[in-house]
Structures are given as structure tokens and as C-alpha cells.
Length: 286
Ligand SMILES: NC(=O)c1ccc[n+]([C@@H]2O[C@H](COP(=O)([O-])OP(=O)(O)OC[C@H]3O[C@@H](n4cnc5c(N)ncnc54)[C@H](O)[C@@H]3O)[C@@H](O)[C@H]2O)c1
Image (cartoon, rainbow, N blue to C red; front, side, top):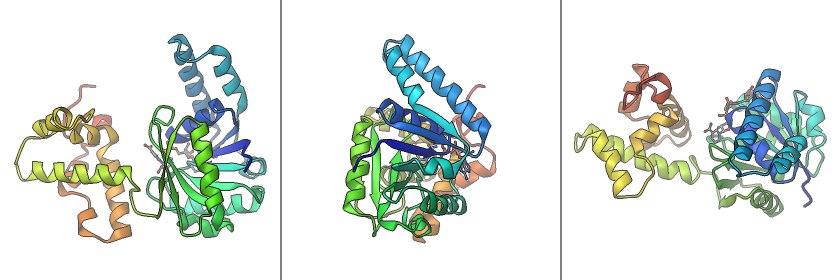
């Protein structure tokens, strides 16, 4: 399948960097958001990112300029959808909003267009029906920061066709990513499941006072070769985000193991959300 134009929906943390990856990959790229100010902020952010890369000699100025020229922005969903061969939806994590976006895409995108969602917690089967083209729907899950992280989890739902998987895999490769295929929908996909298991065990060890959080983090770094310990990572991600993911996973699986850990709930109740609030498992100077 010939994919030339990619529409990214949502110009937030993820959408803007996915859009720039697509533009750098040579695709005509449209970044759409309901908020004009989010689009303006994304443009400023990406221009300064490109300037920084050029200044460091990691990106040629002409290459950066050509990518930015391939990247347009719009607040109009329907008109943008009409031009897209592939849509990657990275709007806010709300099922009702994503469903209405997929319904609009189903009506306005060309019949051949593939519709992917970057959602971390919502499986594409929740959106497939609204789109009216279930075989052309899947998750295409990028990692933060999307301009840096190589992994893209491609998750098929029961109706996703082989052609859809082949096409999005080829696009991910063309962006310089390393796509991995998740054969069926499972909360957390691969990476967040493995990370969740690690965090759960770390939280259990700390709760049982087997070791201090500092020593658990040190062990992860010095024995397992992880770049940071589980508590450092949770503070970086945000303990409210960790709590939200656990709640969404538990709502889907109903398994006690997936419930938010009491240590996390306690921190969130105390307003200790990690780096962003100045304190989580560790204290941070502002
Ligand atoms: N932040 C992460 O680390 C991360 C990592 C992987 C995947 N994700 C997923 O990416 C998606 C976006 O997350 P984010 O962190 O970039 O969110 P964000 O809050 O930074 O950005 C969301 C953007 O969506 C826009 N938006 C809201 N409603 C819209 C609509 N109807 N149409 C178009 N745009 C709309 C908002 O204006 C905002 O700019 C979520 O589905 C999330 O699960 C996030």
C-alpha cells in the first residue's frame, strides 16, 4: 500500500513528536488539534528542537527545513482526514473523544486509509466499530519522547487485516523505528506490562521493608543495568499517571494484582506526584 500523507491527531506531548518523525521520514504530514494554541506551541517546540539538533551537528539544516516544510497544521479534522492515507490518533486519553474522532475519520478519510491510535491504555477494538472499517484499525504505540525512542508496538485487534499490519510496520521502519507486533489485545501491551511487573515487585519489597527505596533503585541500576531505578522512573512518569494506568488496567482485567498499589494511592492522596510536584518517592529541589 502506498502511504504518502499521514495525519496526526492531537498536538500534545506525543502527537507533535510523532508528526515530526513522519515529516523527517519524508511523509507529507498534517498535525491536527482542536486547539490552535496547542498547534502553535507544537510548531515552536519542533522548530526549537530542530535548531538544537542542527546546532549540535546531528541534523543538516536543509533536511530539517525540508521536514518542517512537509509538516502542516490544521484545526479542521474532516478536511485533513480527506487527504490522509494513514491517520495516527494521539488525542487526549478519553474513550468518548477517541470514538467520536474515529467516527469522523470513518466518514471522511479515503476508503483505503488506515486508522491507528497511539493510546497506551485503550485497545483499538474499542474504536474499530465507530470507524466502520474495522480491518483497517490497530494500535500504533510510540514511546515518549517519540523522536528518540525506537520502539513502536503495533497491536492488532481481532479484525485487523494482515495488509494493515504490513503497511503500518513499513511506515514505522521508514521512520527509523523498530516496530514490534503484539498479536492480540492485552492491557499494557508488552513494554508497560513488563515495567508494571517490575514496579509492583519494587513496591512490594519497599512495603515489606525488605530494603529502602534507594537500595532497590541502586540494585536495578547496578545489578540489572537499568538506566534508572523503578522509584526514580515512577517519580519521572508521575505517580498520578502510574495510578491512572493501574486503574484503567484493573477496570479491564478485574484482577487484584492490577489494582493500584497502596503506596502509590497514598502518595497521590498526599499530592506527592513525583518530579512535577517537587516530591514523590524522592524530594526534588525546584
Ligand atoms: N505521554 C506519554 O508518555 C504517552 C506515551 C505513549 C502514548 N501516549 C498516548 O498518546 C495520547 C496522547 O497523549 P499525550 O501525552 O500526548 O496527551 P497531551 O495531553 O499532551 O495532548 C493531547 C492533545 O489532544 C488534543 N485534543 C483533545 N481533544 C481533541 C480532539 N477531539 N481532536 C484533536 N485533538 C484533541 C489536546 O488539545 C492536546 O493538545 C494518549 O492516547 C496517550 O495514551 C502517551
